Length: 444
Image (cartoon, rainbow, N blue to C red; front, side, top):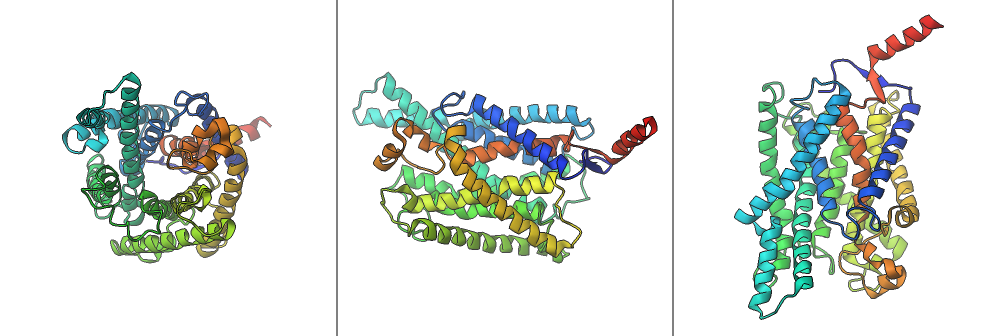
């Protein structure tokens, strides 16, 4: 875990936080240009498998750091630990996507296998008497790959809450302090994997089955709960993304407050979980109210996609995503300033500050996302319609790229530096910094 000694900002605050944030942004920007730019990048013109891979990398990082406590590399020096754990992360991510989920798709659920989805699509076309040429086969294969990677991405998004929530809200009860690693990590990972499977089955799987078998299988259980035109996964995704954000706000800038008023587990975790459900519901309703005020009421079938119900719910999730870098950076690299006024005052100052910074980032995103990152700043979850074609012209394909993709890419350097390298070189152990300052004083 994070060092036996206290780590402190190398250059004091706020300079250390500013330098770290600039460095992470440059790393994300350059690597985005190389790998993900929709025009020039290695994975240009389509969203998958790029999105699935980066999402899996973050979740595997949660396993490595939050659940297994950096085991078995916890005693390596920061640079070596960061390098080894990053390589391990990439290898595990590749294995999950291209080996484990392919096997799972071939044996249990075809949704997770490109090969099985492709074979099913070809068999269905041939049964209908259609002769497929090379271009059509390529299209079917790409569609199968895209569907499989979307399913993997939704599984990861599910896991963003269901894997870390036990550590954050329940403080790893009842195993904390009773088991060594890796038995400790395996107990927590096994339990949260069960929760993940059940949650995925309730929230995500019905959506895919409803799309594939609309006549034979009932649409998702939330279908009648959602407004007309929003009966899809994005209705659930809005609430779920806000749950993820509030969970990590609890772990970061909220410093466990207010759930830590309850001192006994599992009651603290239960109350915190219920509280997050309620707060996420309130947050989505506020987002929808704001969009109604700004753009007008949502309208099913509208030509302007900003009025479409499914866009409104996805955009509510995007607004939640815009809080991620502000609260992560504030906690990890600006040390939760201010803390001198007490937890209650700090809670409100940091919460309001994160929301203000998120609004600023969202406004800036609309200005720079297309010219800088090649991403249309809003969303189409289907092929471009006539209104979008008119707006974008030859760049219409880029409406398929979702803004949350860049946000997740942006936070990976920060998370991996904090998780795997314990913020080195931006932070150093306190005794090392004192030794360095003492040496400077001596030479002076």
